[in-house]
Image: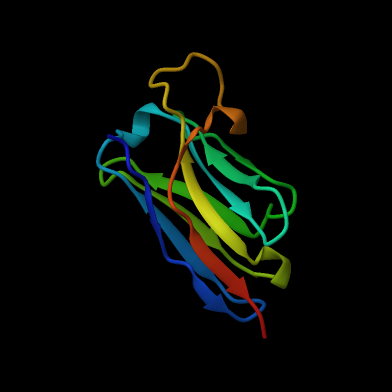
Length: 125
């Protein structure tokens, strides 16, 4: 059974950095698209970034140039490096994966249907 587990959240001052990690023993990360979503209090969950099987990436406009998504296909770990954090980045961050191994289409946020439990990131002075 797939079980995604996030870690690395915490509290940081504006301008600081955090790196989130996501691990799972049920997926071979090289075979599926994976990504990160976030949900701020009182707001809907939205896509942050995803990385497709070929390593191509996509970022939400609000995080471009500050966040970097990557994955270690040997260790099966997905990362989200977050730099220059802003108070508006405060949210619970969720790792997500496409349950369809070998999907022929290019990745989209809507394909990421398997979720972790989330890790809280708080950016505040």
